Image: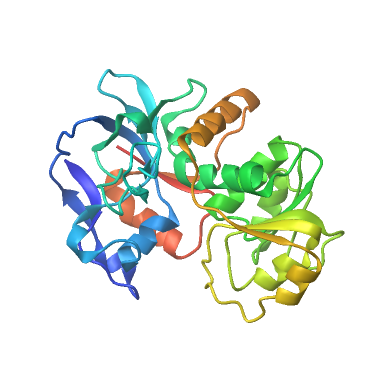
Length: 317
């Protein structure tokens, strides 16, 4: 079957290890099922895999991709939850597709049967394929770990990234007052179009302190994120694309204002089910930057690596 895969890893030049070509069909496993992929989306996790982060040499070659929507073995339309194990499916340690098991950027993917959820008819395959990683991460950050309620205010750092874009759209749909930041004027304008009350340059002073901050940028925005929180507010972090060692940790401010810092990774099957229902019922649709056929996957990876996206790149099979 045709697939996009990591043939080798290179931290400095990740795309050097990306190959497009034939790979073996997935082998049957007890309790697992095979999904015929119709659409899959790219995530920064795929770039980190190509760098060798979370992907060991003994697992190569590894088909990339965490997200997919397609048809199950009965021909039903489904969405794949990419978190394997971790308590939901026995005692197996938790991992994400492409860390231990072949991923979704292929004609077919095999996952535990419990990792397949019905796709809402309201969502296209391309839209549904955006949800299981970035959008699920944003959903968990907002509604599980930040614990915000309608009327609360949220700052989303780094508008344009997959998680940040999802947080803007989901937060707005849930009745939150969303502020955003971006280095790019066009991305700030787009964030407002998607429902943000306002969007600012990184480090800008907000009209007031917020109840929660959604942080995926890391070192470059960390100090600003902490300073934007009200007393008792919550900073939820799920990534650090600019580095994980900020120059100013703001520890004094954190303990003096009794701020909460919460780490967040992906989300549960139940949360994905709730997200799918929320999107279907509220008319929320993922923001898609570009749809490409799988054999043009390299173009999508190059665009993501250059930071030229607003929303998701989706690959169709």
